[in-house]
Length: 313
Image (cartoon, rainbow, N blue to C red; front, top):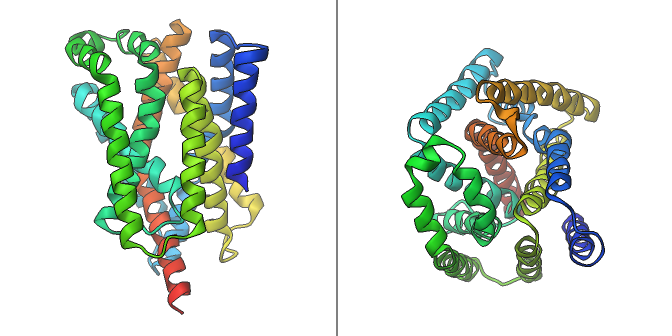
């Protein structure tokens, strides 16, 4: 039901954008920034609680000091990769983000196998491809603001020239992985049909939105709302955390994360322009993705294991 509601919101925005009152670049940026504060960062701020619940599920002793050490270590290591090897770091980020997006959207499917992981990754790649490659004329100036963008201009120009070929290949890969995954996980159900219809509608919305609003709609509304729903459901299942504690912790760690992103941005003159701020927010999210993705992967693995156990029973 929540996905249907989000799709209605997406189509409502398209009608407003194309036929009633097109939003200026400044307005799109304000909506994006507001969404990051209200939903984007908070959806990743419950990682500590999720890790605590995982320790309980696995009957392990949870140590908060070890959690933060591992979390910050992953964050800094990926930050170093992005700084020292920007091309490699950004390609890794695309695949990390693709897998994370796919795992969230496809959490009701069996994805523990190799074919399932290909299904998940190819799904995320086509989503990112529609947002970035289909609107690469908006992405390219952002990348060229940095020395790394100028250094790897040959790669950026290659992407610009062959973006539709790359996007087509991503689409073929996704549908091949989807067909194979559905084939080996018989029988075909109504859920699979609903998924394909919703997926096509989602792609239509993202393709017809400007890049910033497309990312805002998918990451902030679609992905973050679905993630928060899954996180709250997971944390509430055993009564270990009340709704009040969950949202209190989310607010606290959201403030800490936003302070870290702001500090990171100040060191790189993030606030010189809207485009500069936009790209630094993307970089901040990229750095946070590395530790957050692992926490979410473990959570979804636990959810799938519990669901499989119930089905077998």
